[in-house]
Length: 112
Image (tube, rainbow, N blue to C red; front, side, top):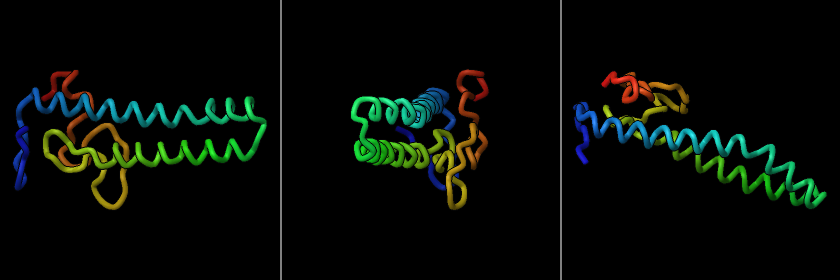
């Protein structure tokens, strides 16, 4: 896979499109993990009636959330190869690259 170095931008639409698809899948996974929390706790409490079981379920869910946040935060932009969501100290999950401004749906809109 061609990598950009020293400020060089990747211009191949296929590489950029596949990178954006991967980024969108990771972001969907993050939303799935976030939305899974309430039903997961509800089912745990309904089945076990135990605060301890709910706490263990929360810790397991939190580990999944932590790993997913790290996975998404440190995804590289397919065009500029910098971190897509991080520009300074912490991630901001906007829909465009924090460095080159590549939109997350640029391949769908034909804006490559």
